[in-house]
Length: 84
Image (cartoon, rainbow, N blue to C red; front, side, top):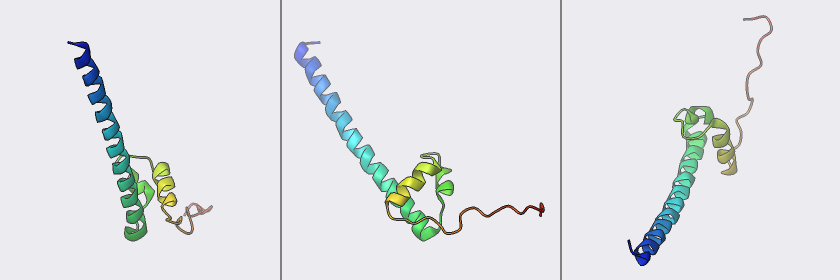
């Protein structure tokens, strides 16, 4: 391989990597926007959305909050002490 061919291969690989990173960032933003819509309009929870395994519920929750979705009221229900 000639030195100029090696340099061209490096340049091509760097360009490809930069493009893929930009596409990945864009795809992640679109996914988090879709998660926010699913929580806001379909009543889904971050825990349900996390079952796909792409991201954990805590990270999804953080991203959804950053997109203006308020936490659900009430939170976890307290356990009854009498065991019923």
